[in-house]
Length: 183
Image (tube, rainbow, N blue to C red; front, side, top):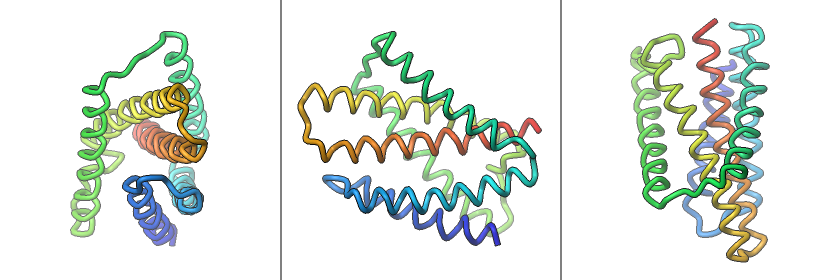
């Protein structure tokens, strides 16, 4: 039952994220629909992991909050500037990881679980995913800072909110997998 909820809500969230990502201006109702679908999917995934590994969800939530605070502090206090090359590299890596995840999902229907959280390759994938989530969060902070400096319209705040939500979900799910591996 949990698997069906994750598949349905996660699938809907994925479709909504694609729609939001490729729209010229992000739609607030679509961002809220994405957040709701993602929340249901994460709730189901968290329930599954918490049943198997008690306490792992609390650790992943705390770790995600610490990552957000740490990246924000580092970004501001160290005056981090992101190059276009860095941004293109992170974006390419993100699309590569999404593609690999989709291939793994399809292969899992045929019994292949090479990205399972309890495999060595799955652990490496999650560590790389966690680092990528942190880099994506840096890009989100950069977008906000550049948008304010350029005087972007307020409606672009939805783009920033959507991007940060995606980055935080990315960080949380990878932390969850890493913590589960070590339990």
